[in-house]
Amino acid sequence: MKRRNFVKNSLLAGSVAGMVPQATMASAAQETQQSANQEFYELRVYSLKNGRQQKLVEGYLQNALIPAMNKLGSKTIGVFTEYLAQGYTKLFALIPYATMDDFIKAPEKMAADAAYKQGAAAYLEAQATEPAYERIESSFFKAFTNMPKMEVPEKKPRLFELRRYESHNETASKKKIEMFNEGGEITIFKRVGLTPVFFGEALIGSMLPNLTYMLTFDDMAEHDKNWKTFGSDPEWKKISGMPEYANDKILSNITRTFLVPTAFSQV
Image 1 (cartoon, helix red, strand yellow):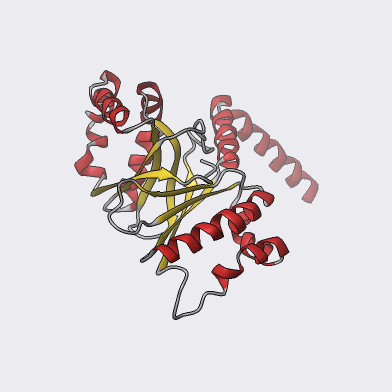
Image 2: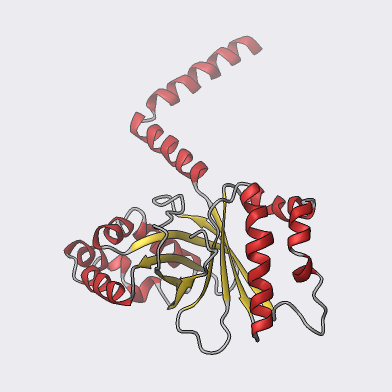
């Protein structure tokens, strides 16, 4: 009896599998592969109040964190200051990870790295009366399926624009991400010169739900020119005119920050 039931169930499973369209199976396999290739990003923002703190944190990033993370597989770490900052700037550190597990295990691995501990000593041993920084704000992102890896621009003087799109709920945020991926907005960006560095869906951080991305330009003149080109692009007008992608339905706030790379930034 058990053998007859086993044969019956096996035949039934085979029949169901045969009924699944090959295109659907291929699509599922492709989505699984894309998901496996998607990077993760940590974006740290160091708040500073004086030149001593800025020098100390920059020294830590350049001489301790970046070398240690490079050894762990994060090869392109970006460090930026605010463009035309008023007073002492914030420092932005963008760190890519191949997997979430890499992110989780990085602190423990760095703590066992003698070179890291030596390079980080002044930063890690700063006293409460003279802290290395005021606070760190950290956000963690998963890369978009249509841009699963960071794309590092040519090493030359550049301007970066960091943009955060906040939504009133998770469904709306997912819809905006869909607009970038399946809707084709990323493709239009690249075609008109809005050169992206990364796109990330915020998993942890402030101002949730949100997606955050970074663009790069030669200078502010190119920034203004390429955004104008984007705004008048026929394909963009078609996509943005779709009712389901209307800004007032899926976005509640847009924040942008202009950044310039430090001399030791790898992005």
